[in-house]
Image (cartoon, rainbow, N blue to C red; front, side, top):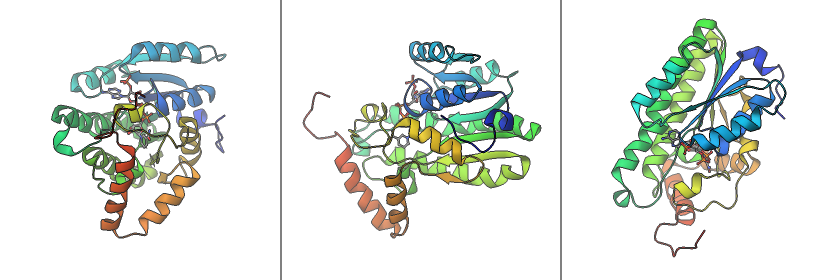
Length: 271
Ligand SMILES: NC(=O)c1ccc[n+]([C@@H]2O[C@H](COP(=O)([O-])OP(=O)(O)OC[C@H]3O[C@@H](n4cnc5c(N)ncnc54)[C@H](OP(=O)(O)O)[C@@H]3O)[C@@H](O)[C@H]2O)c1
């Protein structure tokens, strides 16, 4: 259950839009926010999963969910999404849609790497601009941008992904300060490993990590209080230790970490 000092629906407004709501962290945010009384708009590509989530949410007395299918790697879908929510009073925006990849950069599909920049960065910018501007006009709102510990430095073996998350981290930090006086809370959520569908799409195996529910709860509890939240005790410790290392050493350490996580060049486990 969501723990905030003030009722978040009263603080931010009636409706929450969550991208990446079909699984993992986005799904956990959608469930938490519906429990907290928000009307939730669920966005991703897999409509069957969104419909199932909407059905679950609507079994909560008084809860309401709207499903919008969109491929955020396509500008026309982002435009269509924004048109569809034009008349909505979105008080909370959670940008969780995203994906990664692993392996030597030159071996990866360039189309997929460019799509990653579009989903993780471009769509985040476009949606935050449109939704956040209206929040500023109303002088209230909350924006949650999902970054990653991998975004604190370049990470060999997941070069494009770490760069996209570095982008999100800088973007969120800057907007946190820009929009605070306008009544809009912006937070970067920078998790370490999370147990979700992320690893299979990124050709990695993550067997130890926090749950998406932990990420959603700790982030919502920190929204309005902090610039960045790092969910989970182990990730907090790791980031504290890493941030005290010279940047080149961090890159070397993270290379070792990625060598352990990626399935690239390893025998197929049948997972
Ligand atoms: N899991 C981790 O270890 C970890 C750590 C740090 C940060 N993160 C970040 O957390 C966020 C959520 O990831 P997760 O762990 O929850 O992984 P996940 O379970 O794979 O969820 C990713 C979500 O993004 C959506 N998505 C992907 N591509 C999309 C596209 N082109 N258009 C619209 N939606 C798209 C997926 O929906 P559809 O496939 O249905 O479109 C899904 O709902 C991502 O930004 C990820 O980079 C994850």
